Amino acid sequence: MKILGFVLLVSGWAIVLTAVALLREDVPRAAFVLAGIGVEVVGLALLIRAHPIRRGEHE
Amino acid sequence: MPGLSDTSAFCVMFILLVPLAGAGLALINTGLGRSRSAAQLMMSSLCVVSIAALAYFVCGFAFQGFPNQSAHWLMFGGKGWNWLADGHLFLDHVALNGSPSSLAALLGMLSAGLAALIPLGAGADRWRLGACSISTAVLAGWTYPLFAHWVWGGGWLAELGSNYGLGQGFVDSGGASTIQVMGGLTALAIAWILGPRRGKYTQEGMPAAIPGHNAVLVLFGCLLALVGWWGLNSSGAILYHGADLGVAVRVAINTVLSAASAALAAAIITNARFGKPDASLTANGWIGGLAASSGACAFVEPLEAALIGVLAGILVTFAVEWFELRMSVDDPGGSISAHAMGGLWGLLSVGIFAQLPLPAGRTAGPATALPPGQWLAQVVGIATLIGFVLPLTYGLNWLLDRAYRQRVSAEGERQGLDLYELGAGAYPEFMTHSEEFTER
Image 1 (spheres, rainbow over the protein chains, first blue to last red):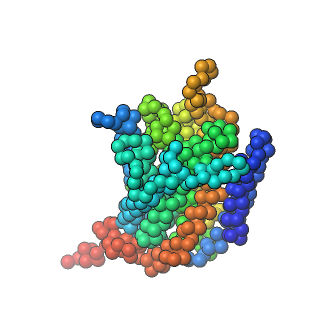
Image 2: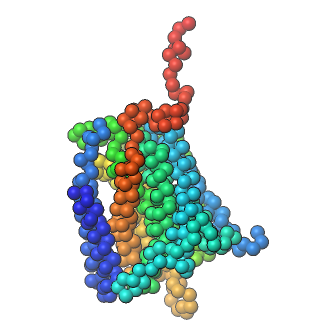
């Protein structure tokens, strides 16, 4: 789950870069940038879920 | 000062205030940690600042560069993306005479140390001295310069305006992204990799309160950091955005307003929730307000700076609780909430409030405005921090952890890092000698 989280973080960033580089119209560009942010948020959520497993590890 | 313009001379003075921000952060981190690790944390702070300066000197500035200098380019979507400076190692070919690039090298050397101090707060009481030193070398020698080039070295984020019409490109006048969010996200990576302190969480996941050992250090550190932030925000605005010297007054007013309103917001919230104002959360709010101010303080009105501060204080106060309770992230210094969350809000505030100077030569209309698309440039920068910098800094520190374990042993943590790593405690007079209490 941790690796998938990082993959989604990088994928979201790639969507943002691609939208900036390839789209010229303001609205679709903004929509895709925000979609990329959304993918990053999902990645972050997965990372957060992956790490609490270590809660008791060091007890 | 012959040969040095007034602007350069004042810029040097502003930059030389920056170490006070580092001193403030070191005191805050130490005060919020345990007494049995206080000397090790201050020692780590000194080592981190030293290693950051050396790593930045060796290769950091070569990778960061300065606008209009040679760089490496990638072609994507029909345009060139400037992604890494092509400078010389060891500050070779940099005229150390007050030129803008030499001032950038000086500011970068101190800023890299400041960014590297931030994760120490998250790793307090369990991060080995050797490990945080190596981690700092990686941060100051590669991660920080790479992103700083994109923002301050004429890189692709700075050129989003000229290349793609997104406002004036990604704007960060005082290091909200390059220093604060960079350090805050590294702090998150370190907190995840190290895991929580022993006894912080029960098997059911409930956190135990481990209060900081010295509120005086923490609150004095806040006041010291303010002076450093004045230097940081002023020098950044002058050096990277061509602001004139007079902007220092606006920057100073806005910086103190942002910090003050953030601290008061945190104090009021904690007073309302817990019946008394919480000193450590108020300190975190103050630092969050400073981090947020770094984004736009040169380009906003005082009232807007105060509003940015209030929202930063609210955000940081709830973020500290959220990270501890919901995310099970043990961050004794509140570094992630204050620096990463405060800095991210500061970057976003540029796209909402900033009145950026318009190109020279205009004969009509206002001299400043919020350019169309500026908010999108800021969002692209934020996406880069979360989608690129966080995985990069996590990955590098994870690899380091495989090669050289970052967390101290269980015995070292029980004993305290002062005795375990340094062989002497910060407060030897705290030791109780039984014979002193024996009737003679």
